[in-house]
Length: 312
Ligand code: R2B
Ligand code: URA
Image 1 (tube, rainbow, N blue to C red):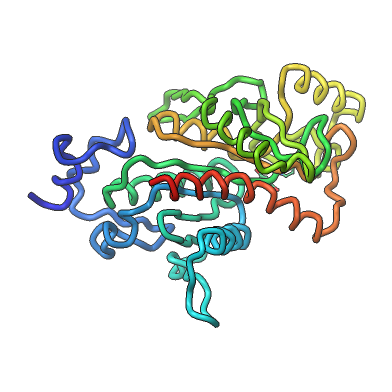
Image 2 (image 1 turned 120 degrees about the horizontal axis):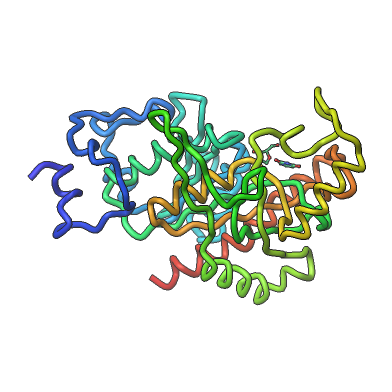
């Protein structure tokens, strides 16, 4: 039985992802161009077979920082003077780090960039024979009616028309995938936040996340290159969204939730608000503050992952 057969025989292994492409098993070769890794070029089972958690966020530096944070939290050591290796260093589209059973990758900005990364990482983890995976998106966002620095767990991602639907156009037809998030996981993360008393340092809220395909007009900003609405109209729209349960805006949650729901894979989306959009459009907090804000989700997700690793 070949490597691939072993991974696709239900009696031998459970699937990490559901609804997988039925053509995959017929490919002799599968090269993940944006990661510069391949099914035949790399021993994926040896490199990634133990992965249980996948943490994604926009920037490569933030993901490297989180990887180091988790290395320290778990008490793993690397030789003095050395740093964690970027697994995708042959390409500069995305960076990827691994600390024990945790894989870290930066997805860039927006759903198309995230979708490419998810396609390649999910196939890679499938070929590696991984099981029982949990994915996290750890991001930044604009808050609506919340203080800058607030950490937000997404309950449901919605599009610019407030629909909880991720749309793909495939062969000239619309495909819609659901974008609800795992309530059980959110509950666990809230319990951890309470136990860790993070509330003494920052607020934690849950709600709907509006996923835009743009940072400016798409997020009702007044300061983009185009804008044909007034400040009052902008505020009215944001307040209406807020009344319907939307607490933040960012640019990847629809795709993250849509793809992972379709694959029936556990996932959570946690973002920190860099500003309150009812007060501001421009991000004016200092760089030091942004760095501090961005690490807030590390504490909660890090502790969740630490507990799951220790329990096993
Ligand atoms: C949050 O921040 C980025 C835009 O600045 C985008 O990736 C997002 O979702
Ligand atoms: N990221 C976004 O997409 N929007 C914001 O307002 C801040 C960060």
